[in-house]
Length: 246
Image 1 (cartoon, one colour):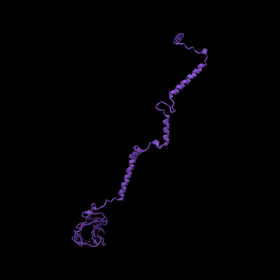
Image 2 (cartoon, rainbow, N blue to C red):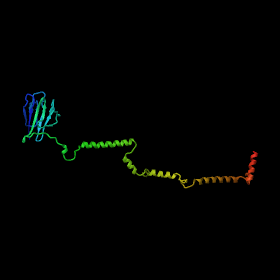
Image 3 (spheres, rainbow, N blue to C red):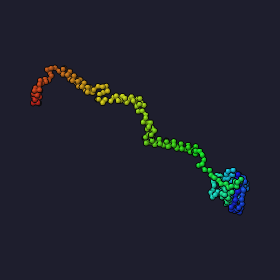
């Protein structure tokens, strides 16, 4: 338990000491406050001091001129810890606070908790972890969009494509069409798909023409057929004779 007092250090009541014997302890211009001042610089309910067995706190109640602790204007509605011999300013009045242990008389000074000395892993709020997960999802979607716009697959897709079977193996209809096209092409040895030799086809055609010519020649009477030279000498004489006759 603490023994608390306020020592006024300016104004007409300078050096007056006020005992804070209840919590909360209200300070203001209103008559219902525990410590009242008539000055207009002090709001009706300016601030309050609260304490328990471990801490002493002061809180501004939304005053017009604010409450100053050790030269720092504290935020309204937010409790501020006090220590022995802290200096306060409430309106135009200044004070020095005395906080001592009631049993031992030792001065009390607030000691902030050192978070580095606490055991256990650091606590991460759920909102922070959720925000990090959402960021990873957005980055993954952005990478996928960039890959599609540049016409390139992602590394995962490339690895899966490298291990996949050929396209024809997964499509039986396309595989059948490809096989038929391969059979329709000529072989490297120059043979057709049926195994026939093209040169044989050409010989057969010429043979057919020869047979047709011979059949026609057999239909011409013998006396109308042109006589062929019996030897090379006769052939030469016939050629010269034809030349001079023309």
